[in-house]
View 1: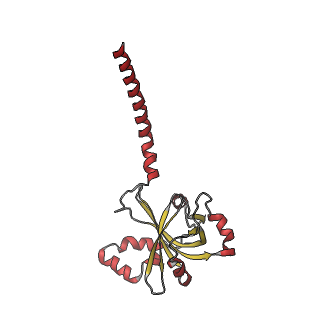
View 2: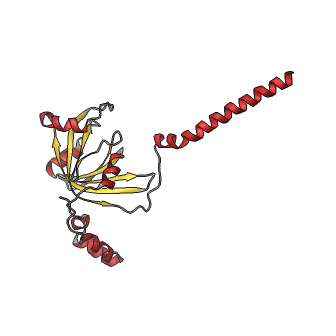
View 3: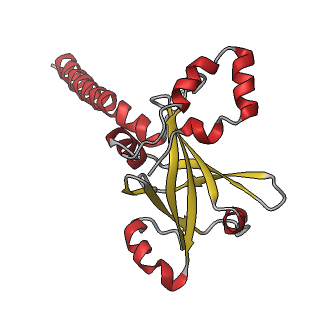
Length: 210
């Protein structure tokens, strides 16, 4: 069961700041929404299935937060049910900072950005890490056979709250694949024009030679 995002993040100090800067009334309504037993809805599930990357924050024993970029094939962050996400932990630089942090404090914060559509989704949850024999069942649910990276473990996130964030200041950016998709009709048209021009050029050469 998820709860309202504001009830977890709007501390007394945050509320005082909102009051001071004039936004408290707006966010008080968010905080009063209370529980959201339905969890992720169709919009959130569709959004998550299209993500190729996200940012994940954890908290270390030194009390310093650590933010890590996570990337993979589209949809590698799997929606297991309305309140659960899971993803394969691909081998990286072997620092294991996030993994270590989550062994002492399992709270995590995710932010997922769709740059072309200028959207972002924030998720708060608690992580359970599965390795070795315990990870077998989960690996079958998160593995992408076409992606050749080594999977070391599986992260399972029990969602406690989520919120769609403001669209302001998100600068649209596009992947190579997205640009190719947009340009494909133009490239086909250019090829057609090139062929027509070549046909006209050959016809003109023949006329001059007659």
